[in-house]
Amino acid sequence: MTATSLQTIPLYRLIISPQNVRRTNRKADIAALAASIASHGLLQNLAVTETDEGKFEVVAGGRRLAALKMLAKSGGIARDYLVPCHIVGRETGSEASLAENFHRVAMDPVDEAEAFAQLHAEGMQPDEIARRFGVTRRHVEQRLALANLSPKLKAAWKRGDLTLEAAKAFCLADDHARQDAVFKSMRKPVTHAATVRACLMEGRMRASDRLARFVGLDAYEAAGGPVRRDLFDAEAVFLADPSLLAQLAEARLEAVAAQWRGRGWGWIETALDGGRPEGLSAMRLQPVWRDPTEEEQSRLDVLQAEIEALDAALEASSTEDDPRWSMRDDLEAAFETIRQEACVWDGELMAHAGVLVGVAHDGEVVATEGLVRKADQKLIDALRRQRDRVSTGRGDGGSKTPECASPNLPRAVARDLTRVRTRAIQAGVAGDPDIALALCVAALETHMLGHKSIPGLSIAAILASGDGPEHLLANRIDAELPDSAEAVLVWRLAQDRTVLLAHLAALVAAAIDLSHEDATPADSQRQGIADILAAALHLDMRDTWSPSLDYWMRLPKNMLVEELVYAAEAHGLTEAETKRRSADATRLKKEPLAQCVDDAWRGRGYLPELLITPLGTGALLVNPNAVIVAAE
Image 1 (cartoon, rainbow, N blue to C red):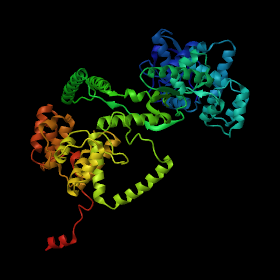
Image 2: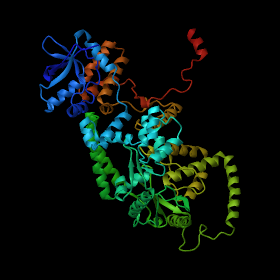
Image 3: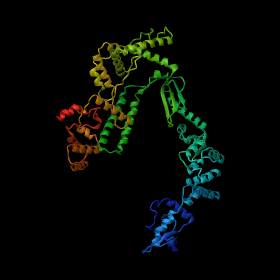
Image 4: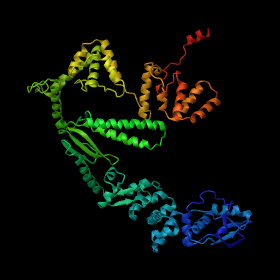
């Protein structure tokens, strides 16, 4: 196609043409194009068609027109700036637009890189190149880095043995010999940038390494540590001096470990590699919970009241993005801080245990408290036995007790003999369910109620949190436990199976806590266990629970509307009537809406899904004899 004429037209008379075939990305990189026009002038004429109103529609060159108008708006050129244009006929306008856009080919990055390198070699700085071509300084630096690749890599890139992404990765190394050596060692074509970086940066450490995160990139650089940054990947940062980083990490970890000194621990050790020191026992001390002081309890009560008041207000508003949720989180954090103050360590035992301070995978400090060395385990055991004798009143003011008497036999002999006896006892208990039952009940209640254990018996249970366990035990266990674990065992062995089974049931029940918030995979697992037990017990929650107005008030408004619709459908209302009720319900405030839902479901055996007992296996099977009877 040949244009009919060439002339200059004032900018204000040019408008975009509906015949312009470019519909998308019309405004892409307009600022860069405007900067280029300002620096170099309009290098390509526009193609236009004349309208009856004296305007000219641009059929090819819409982005150039937008860039010119941007320059005019910013004062870079006049509003009547004369634009060179080819005048084409209206009947060929779309064809001209298609021809210009269809045959356009983007500039190859290698050619662009070498062109920028030529300008840079002539004395033009990256900032000036960026300004004149309307690109960022980083873009220019990236192209200059590509231009600095070795000739072998550039040739491989042009013949297809090296992709653009892999070529960018090679820019991490300035040494051409290093670039060529790595390229030669790799299978062709080279396409994987991460592999290239790994080979080039062998022996260096990534900034994402746990020690680098722990020390901090700023601290490492301030200490003189060299850093290599990838111009094309902001996440690819490499530290060239791992030994310096290790020194900085050791110094910082030692400073952190100093925080534990003076707290009463017998020793403090640090470990950068995440390992455990030699000679540690399997024993580990645990903190204990003391009762809160009057001041702490008072502060806890105030915070709890504020949390409950805030919960009530949040329930009433039912707004997910309510800023008061942040206030609630702050109150809970303050509550937990005070509560944790009641978690304390035994000072006497601490003196024979220690702390290991290390660095986790995310670069955060991790401190493991209560570790015990094998050499200190016997002393801690002796201290604990002494306390047990004092607490049970078995001490005699200094005479030796059986626990601390010197053994008459070698330890290995004693161990073998007691193993034989253990096997005999195991065989006997396995054949006597009554003895086994008594052992189980004694062990469970000793551990659950006395926070002790029967030596040599690995049966334990923990009193579940929540409502109910205490009264279950109070109703079933009709006598106060003896003071010692041995006395509990003797007491239980004297009781018959009926009593033991009743007490065992109460103890097991008190160890159950299947409450959850229905929010996590762990909650789903708890719900599954609850469903299994409910089915096994043939549990019908309608016997113990029914919805109240208070329950409905705690639900968000959208759920109330859904429940009202379900109730309408259960009443057999038509679809039109159900929709009308739903529309009416959405206009109600929460309290009258909750009252409507309560009225709709009252006396109808409503249960939320979490309380419904699933059908057991075979519950829906039809007995063939029942079918015959029904037919008759």
